[in-house]
Length: 371
Image (cartoon, rainbow, N blue to C red; front, side, top):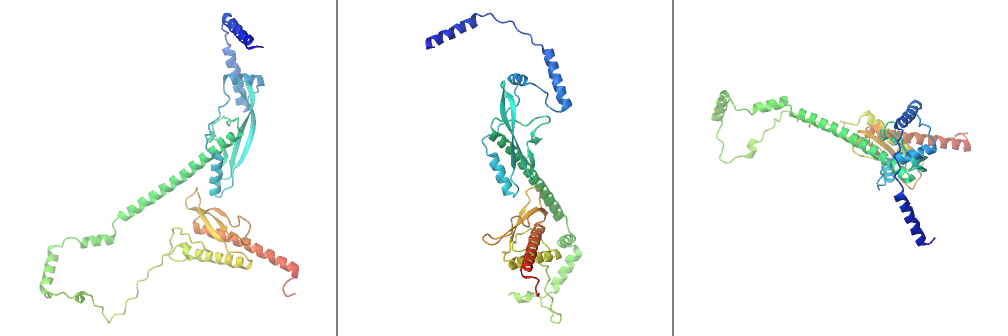
């Protein structure tokens, strides 16, 4: 078909359309349509499942209404940010599950994607209250990548809110403690009251006594003698013992296996708990040396969600023989010192098991000692 023929056909079709009489309006049976909608809504409420519709019905409805808009995920790298955040907190990485679903779009059925992001510490996303309202299905995406980014975005939003809430609670507690300390400092003490009364102006009787004492005192010489003002110690009295001051030491200064991070807590002396913990660290170092292993360092970090709680793990020097990863690791322990001790106890338990295994191997090869 030549271009001139095509142009002629288009012009003819336009002329037919223009010359055709207008079709009379078709009245829609709205009452029956509402009844049809009500019946299917009642079915879904009764069975808690989508109403049974044919493909033709679904495609026809998609021409009238959208079955769900794709949420905007932006250009941010939500998946990478989520993984980096969990790695920094030494938490397991998330698991993403892509779910295919066929949905009607603009009059035809199209393959769409949903994604579920599951984290060990924070749960799954999307879920009710976090990306989903009541009786709402998860959004679907034409791109599997966008569905994954959206699930990671919801997880990061939740983590930020939880972190912000924990920081706010910690700040509130700190402010309350500071206010209580300020109130305690402002209250006058008996010693302060006595000192204040000593600074009050002297009464008449006191002034007369001071004047009489002044009149009886000899007139000092014109050249003052500094040594005359120094108090003389009575040689007949025994020497005063030096003032005893209780040493203030941090709990980490009583030992701790090579990791001397300051907890900020102070105790008067090494408590029985500290002495027992020193014994644990020493046992770890001695037994590790007997087994040909390097003594570990203890890395203790604050729990990101709970103030005053700590996570801990043992770190062995690279290049030598090391135990399997995760030996002695602990989470959410109240107090840094306690977290370090629990890590050491876990390492010690593994070392003892290793020692028993080696002893059993030696006995199986050479027999009991002394036989």
